[in-house]
Amino acid sequence: MQRKTKTLGEFIIENQAEFKYSSGELSKLINAIRLAAKVVNHEVNKAGLVDILGAAGDTNVQGENQQKLDVLANEKFIQTLKNREIVCGIASEEEDDFISINSQDKQHQNKYVVLIDPLDGSSNIDVNVSVGTIFSIYRRVTDIGSPVTLEDFLQPGIRQVAAGYIIYGTSTMLVYTTGHGVNGFTLNPAIGTFYLSHPDMKFPETGKIYSINEGNYIHFPQGVKDYIKYCQMEEGDRPYTSRYIGSLVSDVHRNMIKGGIYIYPKSSLNSDGKLRLLYECNPMAFLAEQAGGKASDGYGRIMEIHPTELHQRVPFFCGSPKMVEQAESFMAKYA
Ligand code: AHM
Ligand code: MG
Image (cartoon, rainbow, N blue to C red; front, side, top):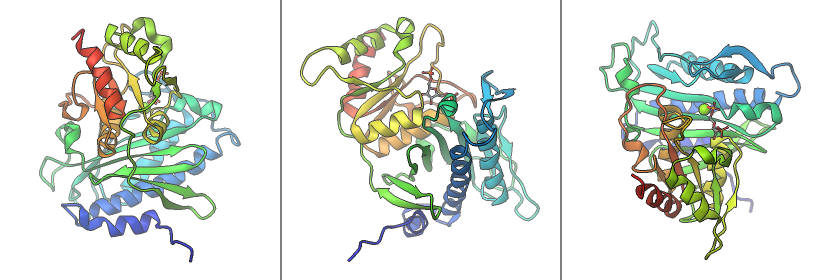
């Protein structure tokens, strides 16, 4: 008899009780993200066909060129979450400030805030290489019934109630956690349904892949330089293989399956690295830890950092636990 494959919709319903504040609100929220993911997937897939490629002409809050698809993905996610009236606030990598959400019949009654990087790795769009969406969900800390404040968004990663990513790759996958392990769902584009394809994803304890933009080697701290040399040394299971897509979601996704480490360190060019703590590092760290991996700034746990600003950047070391520990030991020599 053929095994029945579970859909994401079924999985969400089945696992709702697992969540300690189970009122169905989080499930609805993940359903909304599922819907937005399908819409963005549709747009990403036709990127080469219609004239939606190229820079939109605007720069985002970090002064980087925005691609048209970034703008579009940002709009789609925000619109979907707004329309479904299930969050009280949204912060996006593409927006200068957070958005407070209110509606006539639900006066600031929702309890979750969402932080998103709507289209990460967008410099890869023009060349048909995988990009991703990253999301992070927290319970608000201010009182229900009042508008959200910055405090609701500046929470350490350990307070996340859910996080995930969508990878628009050779196939489209939605991978998420609510703190009970990590599960991956693959989209069947013919019928628009996500199926559970990667249950209980786990980082191998160690691996043979290191992912870092080595072009910046000269600017890296000595601990990172030493670790790179260690990866390249002929000894035991080394040298490791270097794989760097330049798309955080894709690099971490591959390393989670095959075993590996992703590093975006600070450098003499950018003292805090490049990646954003709230939109990129915290959600990837929550997923990594739930998959038995580790996420560090080189010296300590990413998820324990207390954020001070929305667009804060942080150095990021993420992957198989033994590899992250090894990299940390090189960093510690120069602390
Ligand atoms: P983005 O949010 O502007 O797309 O930047 C984040 C991306 C990551 O996905 C990727 O790992 C990194 O930037 C690549 O940066 P670099 O080109 O400096 O190696
Ligand atoms: Mg990004």
